[in-house]
Image (cartoon, rainbow, N blue to C red):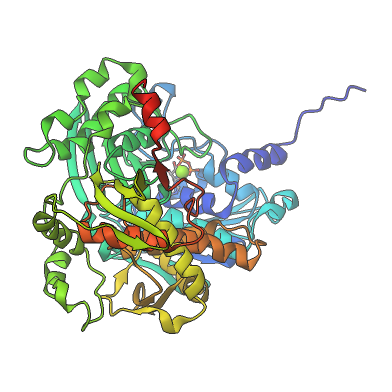
Length: 608
Ligand SMILES: Nc1ncnc2c1ncn2[C@@H]1O[C@H](COP(=O)(O)OP(=O)(O)O)[C@@H](O)[C@H]1O
Ligand SMILES: [Mg+2]
């Protein structure tokens, strides 16, 4: 007897289900997409036990007629595609007609739906792949799809479902993208009966960004629009004010579909060069609308990727739209701007334009001041520092630049003596390096890493002793929901990293104390970076290792930044404290801090 056998239908469906619905989050996503395709303006998702026990999505969309209800669970049945030609003009999120059938073959699936105003509806059910006969069921227009005991009949798959907590985190993160991608739709989500999201419908983008990312980010979001080759782009981003340790806060919506796309991600990164510190990422939400025939959505089992007919145009459009905002007159000198036209003609350079151009680009002064900045200026009087607790404000850098105007002249200064060295600050170069005369040698100091090292050492010494913390009275800082979720469970860890925070309301923190701050830092960046570090720490990492990493992150975020102009007295203070540190050769990440020039090196340079 031969060894090759045809698989039975249920096995085929179960295998197919594995591709479409890997985890509970994939099921929730398919059901929400169906509701959106049905034109729903209100969608409610109730999840139990991370989705293992129950996923229920209800909508107020068009619903299904009796006939359609009978058809919807069949394999490859869809109302959205008639023939292969239609694939060229897909404008719905679904089109393969396999989600409901696949889900039904690995769970107990119930669809209750009505397409009329009379409350007349129908219920169809599938249990482990077997369809039950249609029954009458009362329901207002719309549909409710319930998925119980997901993967109960696929033990191998069920084993791979993670803890309820990590599954629900994945669901929440997908939902927050949907909430941002569809501002017109009201979304409600619960987990085990407790509310997770309740986003009112008919919202504008700013409201939605605020709802998901918090006020402090929403206040800094800029919008820019662009058009090219029949495509339209609406871009929302936080650059250059705010940057994050990863791309978690970037999302791309192409023709109404949330996708991961490396071209779009790369284009954003290129647009950010020189405007955000390297290795960091702005928040960016891109809505791209392109003719359906320019995009192939059918390249991934869960349709989370698309293929562009001309990725190059897409790249250029994103780059121009975002970067263009910084080419407005008076914001950056024209010579410092990359020429996007030139870039288009050099395909190879598109992914990484020559850094030569980029190096000169300076972080522009904020084009418009946010309300928060204006109000905080009241407290930011330099002489109040002793009497009043130092406010966490964004206005400090502006004050710094005004101080600089009076002290930047090359006045004569006596050398200072510290820790057995004589030093004199000679100046600041490229807003990044401080040149000093150290015992008669010229030495460059990287201002950011030196400051980072000082803070790190100080945090190490101080954090256990909260009495030495710098007391602050901060305004509540609204963080992205995921940051709030993580930090509110890890307040003690944050405190060990020198940051005493207290949850405030449903999603903000008050910063009570920080163990140190050398420069003005952005509290949202700091909180997001610490949350990220906690999130990415391996579960079994020893406690002290994580604390060490948190200290490094905190030091980096609170340190003086590269690109920040320093006054002479600020440089003096920084150098003095740096020279006092004992372990001061590298920053906590291991980068060198200083470079001393010797007589020999200079002689070689001048061929003496
Ligand atoms: N929430 C819903 N409201 C109205 N119709 C729905 C809903 N969910 C599914 N349907 C119908 O069931 C069909 C099959 O759904 P699905 O298996 O997800 O395939 P697809 O979305 O690819 O068409 C859809 O084409 C649609 O006609
Ligand atoms: Mg579908």
